[in-house]
Length: 332
Image (tube, rainbow, N blue to C red; front, top):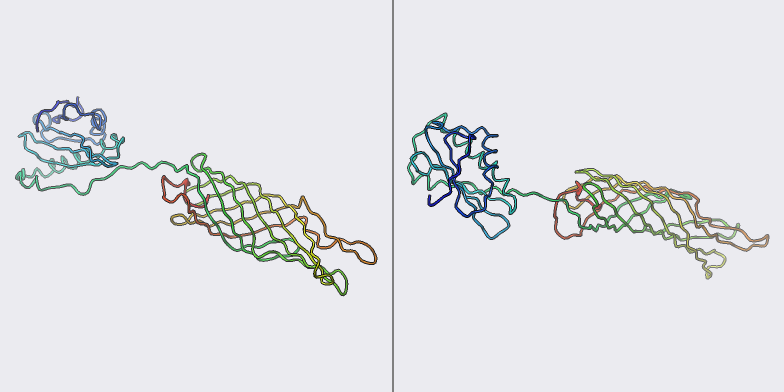
């Protein structure tokens, strides 16, 4: 066993002494081992009449985890048990409960069955299963970039089906709370027609661009996001009677959006969106007729959007931390 500093566990377990290599940083600390043994209620056969020795020391492996080698010697100074436990660097306190659990199971077997001591060769050949690595995952506060696509329904002058395409960027401010910005468009462009006279019709093509800033509360599987949103419409119109003349305008509608999120496996999520908007910048198109100038193709004062989208978070390239729960994964 070599030279060792012998430290008695004062009153914690009768008949058991704790040894560790001299000059070694205590990993885990003696008090943590003592507390773990007391919590596990480890019972040593023979009590104070027999002295068992628990010896451990820390071995650097060169990776992100260190090895703690423990050896248990009986009253006859023969090796009875040997184990190697791996712990993440800086998490020494996590090894104390593992040491106590191993000793509890070993001594419980000894107390109830009292088997004869196996030959030293058998003990030397006994090896523990692959060591357990204790990992503590921290929330991932890196910004996330995601793309979402899905079907939608615009309810304005008249209902129209569309496809929604969005690109979003979000960042975690606290566990389960994220802020995000998104930009996207609706496809195909919306169409509107209006009869100008019995022999003429005006036609409009509307390209909707959408922007939003949302706050999201996310859990393990579900989340909800709300925030203000705006739609910018780039529009062009022409009449059948003058096909070579095109008028153009830009209008703006603002409102709010709410989306319920369902997080799927890995980086996937599904969102059900409901938004309502009011036109604040609505320039008009005019057409001159014999009885004067008339307004045509007026933009809707109010309109709504219902959409179901599937999102994929493609940045950062590797997963780090836990979901926020959100951190969940998902596109926010």
